[in-house]
Image (cartoon, rainbow, N blue to C red):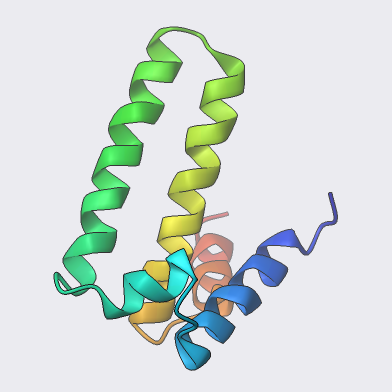
Length: 95
């Protein structure tokens, strides 16, 4: 895994947002009839699944659900016309 994997994933998300291919799950989140609520619901669902995995000490599932949360968070950032630099700046300020 490269250090810039988040940048790569975010670039794909931005591409799907712009192109809206019919066969793309990511694109479907941008065009969902529920609007951004679809992504917010997914973030809630994945957070619950992560908490349960952590409670069960299931490292594989913790990694899986964490990745789902990060992915859906990146989609939300793209929906709000934000990018990874916004996130990096905020995290940098908290160091």
